[in-house]
Image (tube, rainbow, N blue to C red; front, side):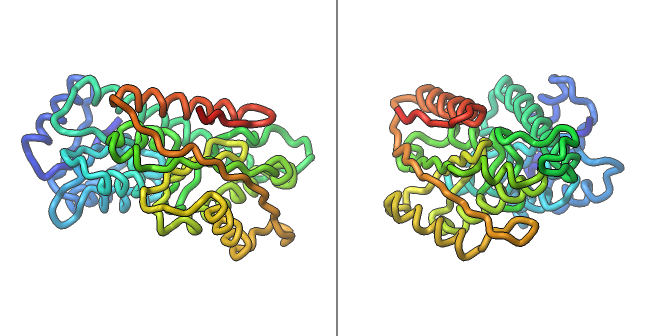
Amino acid sequence: MTTLLVDDNPDILALLEATLEAFGYSNIQTAASGQAALGLIENAPAPFNLMLLDIQMPLMTGIELCSAIRARPEYQFTPIIMVTAMSDQAHIDNAFAAGATDYITKPFQFEDIKHRITLAERASFQAEQLANNAVALAGDGVGSGAGPRLGIEDAIPIDDVDGVLRLHAFENYLAQMGRLEFSRTRLEILTVTNISAIFERSDSREFSDQVTDIAECVSDAMRSFAPLIAYFGRGLYCIAVSSRCTKTLAELSADIHAQIETTGLVYRDGSPVTVDFELYDLGKRSFISPRSQVDFVKRMIRELKLAAHASAPSMATN
């Protein structure tokens, strides 16, 4: 297993390297800039298995580096953890949007580093397994009985759509967001009510494409409000919308519907895809402590996962 650490501060690099060595990581390479990191990536005999990137670096920021890494197919699922002393929410938003799995802040809590690396590695492995299953099952036929297929409840990984995060990254984003910023963030749940019909009409690859296309329509319709979106399975999307959004649910729903109509989703045979959906508002939440915020996020994520695995999903909002 190989790890890449990138930071323009040599003291931070030495500290991170010593910390990871203490955790049992042995094959560690370091770079003092984004350009140097890209050179190591280009010439590596095999892809790195884990990356920790500083956000604020000259010439190429860690966010730009993260985006460049994610553009390489071999790093689609690699855990990328951002390292930052910055509490500016915009930088954190941009880091997750660029493909970061998680972030840790300076000064470091060493046990927190270990915990977050472990969770990031586990989540990335699960996402890769699910994506590999989708590829392996791409040729299955509807109603052919030709073996297993993706389940309607699967949290299908969505790639190359602005603002769409992996579940683990989405949970981390909400849990670590500053309490003031969280209190200004709207949480919306979009449920595709006819997802079963779309699922039954599609094979695994086509269903994955439809789930992705719907996410892209949502992203495009809400682009001016910088949404961050996660897909939980069974047609359930959770959307975090910035405080700039003053539109009502009816207005947002109309925008999404218009975008779906404009895009013109179709099945493989050319027939149109009908997308019926409902949009729910979980509202804005305020918390008296970081712990209560984390507890709420964990409870919400757990309920969404349970809803995705239920035959008739519903979401508690209290």
